[in-house]
Every structure is written in C-alpha cells, then in structure tokens.
Length: 178
Image 1 (cartoon, rainbow, N blue to C red):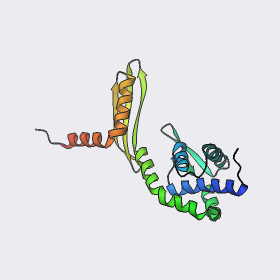
Image 2: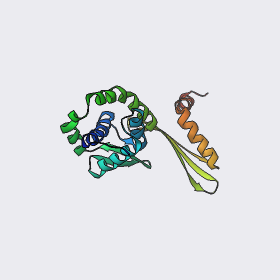
Image 3: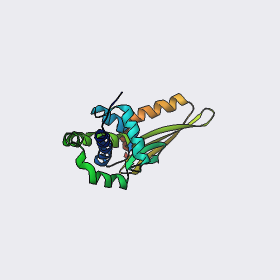
Image 4: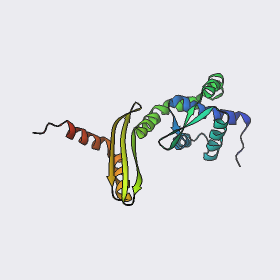
C-alpha cells in the first residue's frame, strides 16, 4: 500500500514533533491531523500511527482538559528534535514556519471560546459558556434551560457569535442605569 523508507518514517515523526514545537501549545489530534493533511505531508493513517508511536515512546504527552485530549511535546521530544531537526528537509520546515502562525491563531481562538451543556434532571439542562484569555477565565455564564435543543442552540450560537454576545453583555453591565 504505502512504501516508506526508514528515513521517511523518521522525517515524518520529526515533522510531527516540529509542528508541536512551532505551535508551542497543546493541540487536539484533529488539529494536528488537519494541519498535516492540509499541507499534504502524509496520509491520515500514518499520522495516527506516528502519533501513537510518539506517545508510546514518550516524545509526546497527552493531557486532558475539559474532556478533550491534547498532545504536547515532552522534554524527551524537545531533546530529540534539538538533536535531529537537521534530518527534516528544509522545504518542510519552511512550509511549517510560514503557516504555523495562522494555524496557531485559529487554534488559540477556538480554545478560548468554550460552550458545553449537560443534563441535570428531567427537562433541566445546564449550559456553561466561557471566555478564556491567556489561560484565565475572564467570563463564565451558567444557564439552566428546559430542553437539550435549547442547550445545543445556545452553545452553537455562543461558539459562532461569542464576541458579539460577550460585548453586548459587558455593555449592559457597565451601562449606567437611572
């Protein structure tokens, strides 16, 4: 099916380490996968295999945050990259170097807006909406609604329009009422 030399396998794993290094923040599996697939550096199954192997080898660590698993470069991964980064072709490094800032911005923006809900009781759903800035929750709103449909709609609207909704709430709260 796919034939790779051992050098190509090493380069692919080093490329994943390099991406995590350049992003300088934990990433979801889906974000890593999308980033690599968009740049056409390897196929989906190879990415998943290499991520698993890098975790098993302790070059990447998995951390849980709000029910999601994030991948981050371990100290061993940083050391490995420092020693062997010259084995990544310069055109691959340049490709990552030119695109990582925009990708990082997208991931940071996505992680700063949080919306989820859970069922508390029959016909009672709790919604939690958050804005996180530099790892600090600057805004949290908890709502209680009677249906899962309402909860889902509120979460979707928050994710799509959080900036506008947040500004409306802040404007209302700082407005002087007579």
